Image (tube, rainbow, N blue to C red):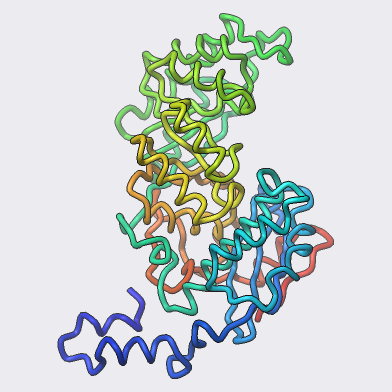
Length: 412
């Protein structure tokens, strides 16, 4: 709970609600009056993680700064630079209006989907951090409050280079026993040594057996200690995906992710309908308009938006709202730094149908160094009560791991 609001629970508190509101919203509290605030600049710095993370900072004339993150992608920093004049002078608390304003101004660059939406997402996340700091509330409160105090994290373990089922099972056991996760994901678009022509997306019987062997080994090894999902990265034909999903029905598969290319919704729906194996899709669908088609056509069992890619925090909340009307859970795809990971956790706290948030950097030893606070502990994220996202960039760590040629953004 924010310290400014802690006295509400003290019967001897000297503040009335009206006095508290006046103090916490104005100059006496050390925070600017909410409607007397303007954006002065937006800056980006790219960090060389296991992906090139684009960190975004929105600056104001009151010295309050919001930090966000956009999904990696060529041209994202340049797009954010192009958008900056469209929001300078605007009030950063008008998050919805500024989002729609940027979508409209960037329509020529393709703001329906792709890197333009991703660039807007980074600004939108930073605005939530900034607004929370100005208002003295955690970001989840801006989304309507919370359903849970902590959000489950699933660890993407990739798959051993040799794609050996027992090596995958060994890694699953290590991550559960030594790192404390009870939710995992492995890749299935891995070589079996039996491929003849990967371009045609066809799976031969031996290839399906090899993938089933990976699933069997991993799920048997961790059994009831962890849920395990498997990712196909849009690799297979519709028929092969159906045969693979059918083969996996005998195992405890949490979900099978992206078995077919993302463009054809009819094929996706046909694959999902064909099997009892849960199918997850969503990271390559932008904004709620595209995710809605997946959900309304019942083409998914689990929807998996990537928050700093698909539109940001409120857009992910909108996707979750549509999914909830169809009783579809949300498992947020996430290959981000601690910044967007924490933004995803705030959304996960604020929606009823959150399953988990992905963590993709367990082999990157310095991931947690980028912020001062602990983010993931014992396989979950405790959603902070500090204002905004509740994290503080470690500028020294950011500078140490910047992409070559990048410039560190201003501290304030």
